[in-house]
Length: 182
Figure 1 (cartoon, rainbow, N blue to C red):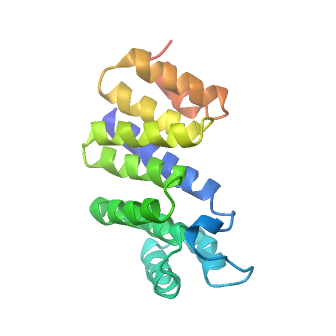
Figure 2: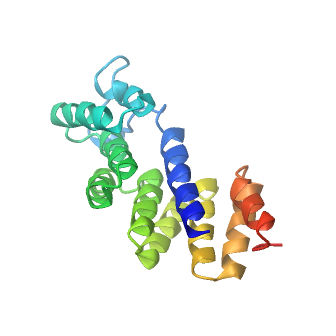
């Protein structure tokens, strides 16, 4: 069951990071992104099927625009896809340092921490993501899965139900099908 939950967490992190990718970098990133610019193309890298190509492309973007938190977040997601969790965390850390209110980067870093077995750090990041974006379905689902893996069913089921209320029901349905949550 843990392998299934880890796969779901990874999928949720990817879905979550993609949800923000169509938005331009914020003014707080230090640079404006013009339509058609290299930084705007960071969204194209996420759609490529090869994480190594994503990393290569995003590294070039970062060299051109070192204050672009979206590029660091997306490269972190690509590293995570290759199970290079420490590199992913380093990029999420950089994204957060550039944009302290970057809820997706906190959520993604939480997933990476979870993958390394650092569940308390993961929960802290999911908590921060939820503080920053109160209706963040992926963060609730990820935190719920983390709690469920710690056999904290009451908290896990409550979070997966909240995620479902916010439109992400797959985690709750999976937990219900396994008689983990009512």
